[in-house]
Length: 114
Image 1 (cartoon, rainbow, N blue to C red):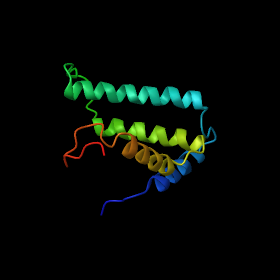
Image 2 (image 1 turned 90 degrees about the vertical axis):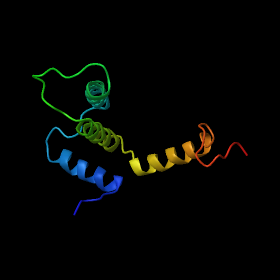
Image 3 (image 1 turned 180 degrees about the vertical axis):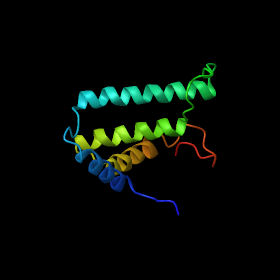
């Protein structure tokens, strides 16, 4: 059976992982550098699989899924250290997008601006 968790539970698990080390959370600037690095690795994988730049034959295989996981992990570290609840952030963002961009793209249901 696959484990299903909420964002809050995942953030708590990441927090428990980080708190076991003396170094704890790095500074926001260091975390931003790490997040940028992980996003770069994700971009590289996307380019390998969907772009015009195939992997070299001696390069280790990585997956887009693995790199997205790394981005998510580092994002949770940053959110935890800044005391940001990603569940709240997600809900606020979805509300914003559902209002602001409700008719931004052609809808499958055919609805247009009211």
